[in-house]
Amino acid sequence: MSFPLLLSWLASVAVMLGVGSAHAQGTIWRCGNEYTNHPGPQPEARGCRVVEGGNLTVVESGRAAGNAASPSTVRPSASSPSASATGARNGNERVGRAEQQARDRDARLILETELRRARERLAELEVEYNQGQPVRLSSERGDEARYRDRTDELQRRVERARGDVAAIERELERLPAPR
Image (cartoon, rainbow, N blue to C red):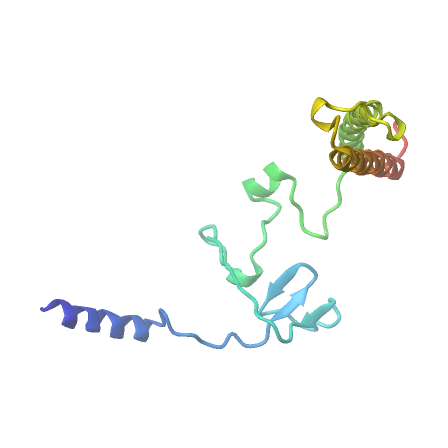
């Protein structure tokens, strides 16, 4: 079989199998963060909305063997090893009180560590900024514009660091009181 004939034959087989040909997917629904072709009974009651206009790219991942769910609605089950290892749960499961308290303690520890680091960064920047009068670098001695640009940049960095500290403090306030 010649090469052009082989390519022609492969192309026709690919078209018959649907490779390379576009096909309509029907109605696409958005149910929270999930996009699906099969929203189930009464999708509006579940808060599902039809996706209109625009382009939607669907990337299908591999499924575990024996999973009967459609590819567009695959979710880890609570009994699967990956779900239990990552702590993933479906919306109907509740976390036990002890586990939630442990999670809250971990979150508080992480946020307190980040708050300490953010405060250290802020303190360093405030020293460098020196209330709008940073120490002139040797390259800035005769160049007022360069000094002004660096001062403005330091001011922006100080303001950003203050905002970071305030945001972390707000997150800490949202957590339940430690027990």
